[in-house]
Amino acid sequence: MHLIFISSLVPVANPASGYDIANRVIVDAVRLLGHKVSVLGFLQPGHQPSSADETRLLGQLEVTNARVGKMQKALWLKDAFLHREPVSVAKMHAVTPGDIRSALAELAPVDGLVLNSVQLPGAFRDIFAAYPSVFVAHNVEAHSAADNARNAASPITRFLFNRDSRLLTELENALCAMANHVFTLAEPDRAALGVGGDDRSTMLPLVTSVTQPPSPSHRAPVYDAGMIGSWTWAANRAGLDWFLDRIARRLPSDFRIAIAGGIGDDVPPAPGNVTFLGRVPDARSFVQSCRVVPLISRSGTGVQLKTIETFEMGLPSVATTSALRGIAVQPANCAVADDPEDFATSLIGMVGRARDGDLPDSDGHAFHGLQLEGLLSALSRGLLGLGNVVNKT
Image 1: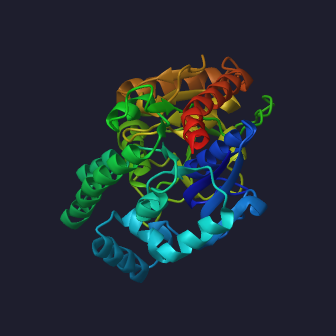
Image 2: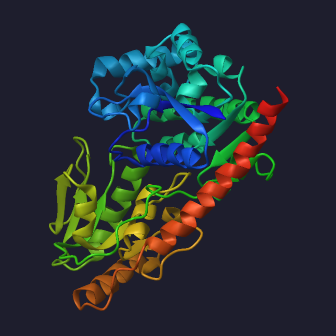
């Protein structure tokens, strides 16, 4: 089949965020199954498409709130109310319906669409409804927006997140009803989206790449614990604030903690043994410089790509239950703790063992192999229904 991957942001050559990693892996896996995949969407500035010859760009678009000015945010908000859409969906109106129709015509003949998350598919749902499709729900976006509303510091922000949650519920329901099959990245999301039956949805186990991860190598850790992420995203920031407020203060003063990744202007208070590094040139090298990786998700839906990456690299970790969403089997060198005191105790114990050389890295090949096998099997099952629709037309 010739499938068009419809995505707000196209897969890129050097994916860094969890969303970018998932996009590229899903497209690469569908191609491994023997299908032709073309990509339609925007390119985030500073990146290059992963497969330029098979990508139809709608233009460049910065969609991250923290990287645009007040005027652009105001324009997005205006479009959100004008179109009665969530803000993330309204950003897609940088192009017109005519632009979408022309792009699809250039890519014809088309057997079906892979509608990737809610943003671009939701903005032009009426156009995409004319094609057979599957829907990839990275998260239950409505639930994430509701969580953000509960954690909002101001009444205006709370109102906007609640508005988004209400509209996202309508939009996710419509996309699920429209699709021939729904893929989620975590098992609970299937029921949360109202598509719990096996004939309607399938969970996709993820990997960070369809190629095997490197074998474990000698490490010379600089930090006792380290985390990297996009901390301007509300769900990630909630986990970071919890760690700094409830856990870091329970750790010894000589326990070295590093936080890498963009954090914005609002740097949270932290003990003196915490270092904020900002963006680092090589995420993998940074994580390898840490004895133990805290996996600190506290809320949200979908899967935590940082958890998968940590397990593929074989690094010791302490994880919350939420950080293990979408993971069927956890490695032996991962401890699970949700209570702050238990989390801190596990971190201290694991770092002590790592310092003594008694906590080796695991081999992530087995974990990666199981995840990839599950991903290809799940995609094959879900796309089978799409193929049946195509064969009948």
